[in-house]
Image (spheres, rainbow, N blue to C red):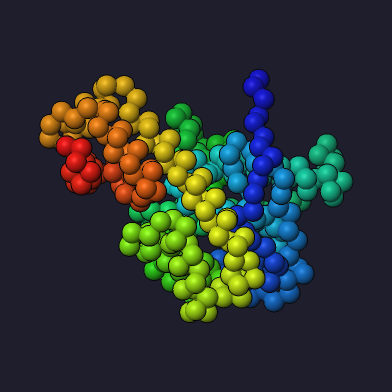
Length: 302
């Protein structure tokens, strides 16, 4: 069996940093569940801080109300979150059983906290306000009755303007959404990524959006956002390059544009978009043939 790759270079990320204190995390929990807990100390954080399994960023996990809660933030759409959640929950339950000194060979049934898996998504792919991803959707073989394994991820779209009731219930979630929207607004306006982040942070401080947090951690926040965008850039770069594998892909894309276009020209377009960090345009170009044609024309690559 191949060894599981475990990365130990995990850097702080903005979303979990905003919600790392128990009061903020409790407010987020209340907003998601429609509850009204008021005692942050009732919440026990059990995030696995020092490892990433198979590229899975471990954002926030905690125990409350006899629930094992896993909260993830994602800016790149990934339908495989339930599988990654299964891996992570396995580690959490192993830790829980060890901490409580539970005997899995006991003649009596163990009582465990129920798992709840929430994903906060704010990427550019179109998604509904709320959807459910299931591990069983990955199984090609259908069987009668329930599967031996299942993991459900409830995905909330937290792009600005979505899930307004959820945003009203959790001010910090609203403010995080607003900050990211401002970064994208400045990027669309022609700012470099660094300048867009600087302008968005300054705007939020001026408008009292995450103001205290941003003032206190401005340099760190800027570095985290730039790092996260670089990670997203890498993921989208890999996605873009996959479109260039083989002449058949180049011919297919050429046919979608109404004429034969070489893979080299399309690759040149993606390279330009990557260099200029036009991430939204890049993702759209890989999925929308007509928009790809417009960008080819814009760069003189027809």
